[in-house]
Picture (tube, rainbow, N blue to C red):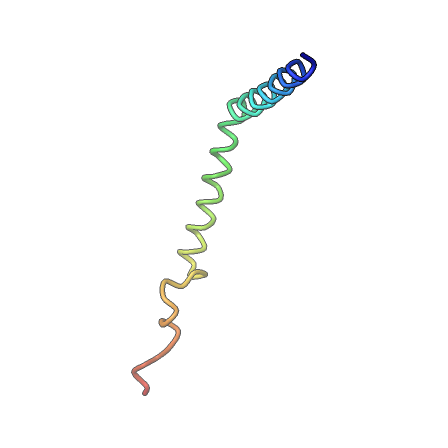
Length: 65
C-alpha cells in the first residue's frame, strides 16, 4: 500500500512538472518564436555577407593551372 501511494505521488509530481512546462511554453510562445526568427535572420544576414561559403572549392582558382 505504501509503494502504491509513493508511486501515485511521483506520478502526480511528474504530471505537475509537465503541466508547468506546458504553461510556460504557452505563456512565452511569442517570445520563443521571436527569438527563433531573430536567430534565423542573423544566419541569413551572414549568408548574404559571405561568411558561409556555398562551396569549399570556390576558394581555388583552377583556371591558373
